[in-house]
Image (cartoon, rainbow, N blue to C red; front, side):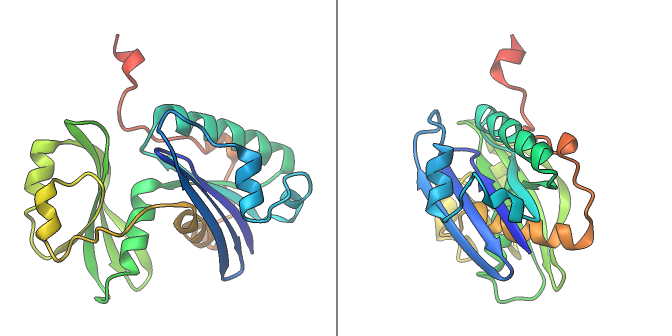
Length: 219
């Protein structure tokens, strides 16, 4: 199975090429307002955009939550390719991707993982997941949460924490996995699991998830 995946949802651009059980990935950080050079990303994983799409089983991307502009551009770009190449387009939650990465750092076979992604100074995106023998399962609907509520969640016992939206006080918690990041590699692995269960991934339904109304729509 061959899957090309992207995570271009915030202050980094990430690409991965999954081939069976091997994953070749590349991530570069940048200002949130900057957008990736697609051809440069393709070259970093040895992918020829002129011919290699024909050998793929699917394309996957980080659907959000994250930067409104980045998510919209990425989804539109990949939808066009998926339609032309007749490929499944699989959207994967950024929060779930971080939870998946966190699960690799946890020895327990079954635990709860809380994940946050910074939205702005007053809010964070929040997701609750469970590591099981079958993989990562969502336990609560993803939401946007005030920092006041995030402080409360950070005090919960018997859970692990990952993501960049937690208050500084969590750094002293031994169950805070500070080194865990999202990225296209986790997106590719989760997309492979999705594709093994179903082949119904119509590009028309592969939409970003914002969770927060863009500023221009509030006016």
